[in-house]
Image 1: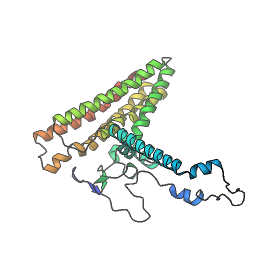
Image 2: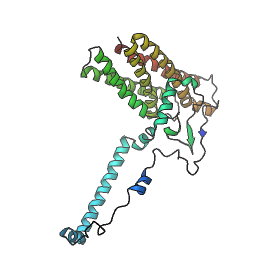
Image 3: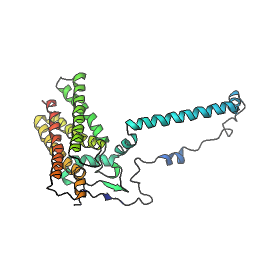
Image 4: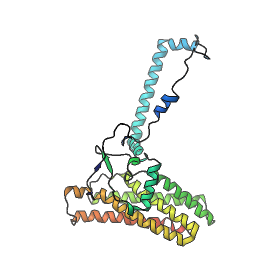
Length: 299
């Protein structure tokens, strides 16, 4: 198995192959094939344009100058808004985490439930840039965590409804508590990485993605609890807890321990031991939170 610090390169795209840097499919060609042609005015079925007050107004140089000035102001305003939005919300980066397709989602769900069958955990790179998630099952995404969180809230509402305990306030408390725990997790990990002085390419968005995968197992546990009672809940949730633990260990060690391997730090070194403990702590926290956020939903 290759070292943690190595980055697997993918070959340069050949003609006719999908570009790994292309986040979404290009559909513009379909417009040029079937929707671009329109009949020009003045042809069959279209009356020719005649002189009108509007035409005379547009021919006025002063009005043309005013329209050009207004268009310039609108363009500058749009550019200013885009810059300010991108300063606080990295829209361009977020697009990368939502560049998924159906095949990726299926493979990722299989990886979350059966991480023991997966061998290669390295993220694919091309020209020092990670390829889009739909080309690499190891890449983190936000689509599955976001959909899993929404589904978890809906399943929690269903569970509360079957027990005659449903109320909007209780459902809101369920969602807000899950978000609060996720926020605390991210802040605690970022603080730990700072204290341990780990220089890693693990971003805050990556952390949100990895920590959000636990909602998939939580959904499975609650659903099985509704169908088969507490026995089904504990069996499925136990399997999902072990799976997410293995998944987090094998994923985060390539991120947190990558710098140590690149610098040649011994495995038994003090700093490297702290990094290993941090990885184990993050992975071990996932099963605990999965149980804490779901045990009261099954009676």
